[in-house]
Length: 154
Image (cartoon, rainbow, N blue to C red; front, side, top):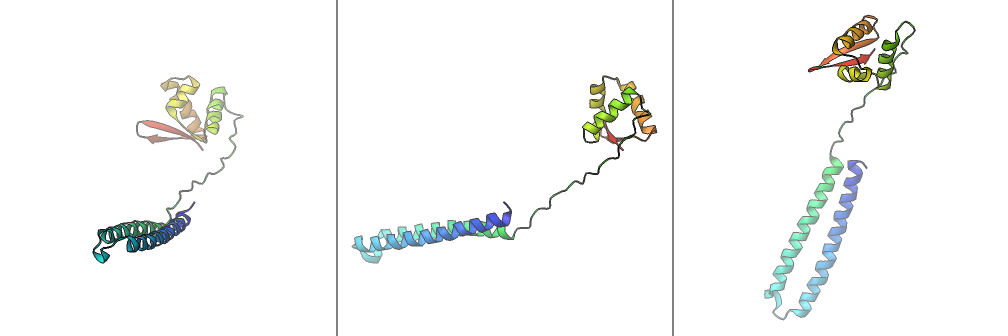
């Protein structure tokens, strides 16, 4: 649900609370009038007044929370546009180079160089040379992220 819809629901709940408070206090006041012999000096009148104000304040807080939700600006959603990658011509690639391309296609076009090493079972020097060849053929691109490289399919 959107904030605005929830806000309308909360405002509705607060209006129902105001109605319940009014009915309850009206009924309680009539009970106090019929049972208290001391008139307006009866301690139950002050208790009723305090109770009424506390319940009205709670209902007002709920009402204002609903208003805030209704008029609050919606947060912008970040939409990542995924471009469809061109099909990579793997006819001129050797077996290991084809594996790299397949792994990258399976992983949405990007993977850390270290995880590529683990998946292929190749050491640091071997993966560097392999990725250098693929970069020279303009099939992949390496991007530096801190101490790691991310291998991206072009």
